[in-house]
Length: 125
Ligand code: FES
Image (cartoon, rainbow, N blue to C red):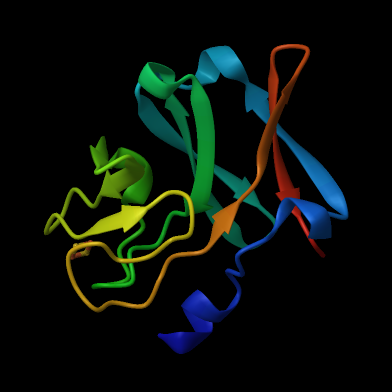
């Protein structure tokens, strides 16, 4: 269980060493998410159109280790963009990964950039 989560590490934009070309922006629903694979990781990417911002995080929910966060519901908690897991509605900040309605471990978050209609995710490995 820890092994599954230990490969996901929050990456600050200043620490990015590789921008992974994930997919065209058209692959992502507006105000929704989709999952991409990078090496042995599943990364959830969100096109938060209402805030005109993109976010990325681990796809694994730390509650039951289901690979489901990309199918969660985007929302806002007092200005903090959040994702609600579709399984049991645990919510996580998309800015720093914090579990906003419980005491679960935070999720790993990753920087996103858009270039020439493609979505890139930043990794530090
Ligand atoms: S598996 Fe995500 S809230 Fe339970």
